[in-house]
Length: 60
Image (cartoon, rainbow, N blue to C red; front, side, top):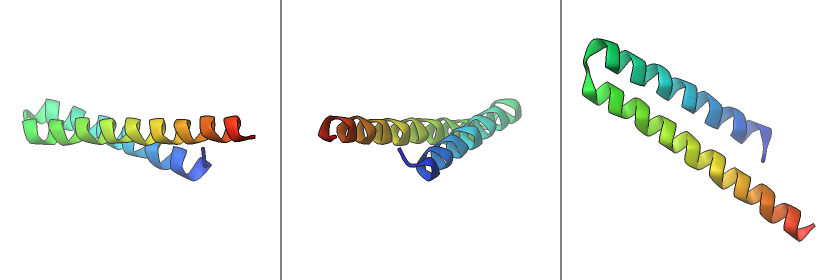
């Protein structure tokens, strides 16, 4: 997995956690949902990159 992609996904996850917490504290369900969506997107990014790493290992 490229370091850049991992950093981007981690940053997106952290951003989503913060946004979710702000939505929870402010009582804004849309903000909370958007934060959760960012976290899910980050998880997908990590999974895709992990699969790429496994495929590279098999090919090598």
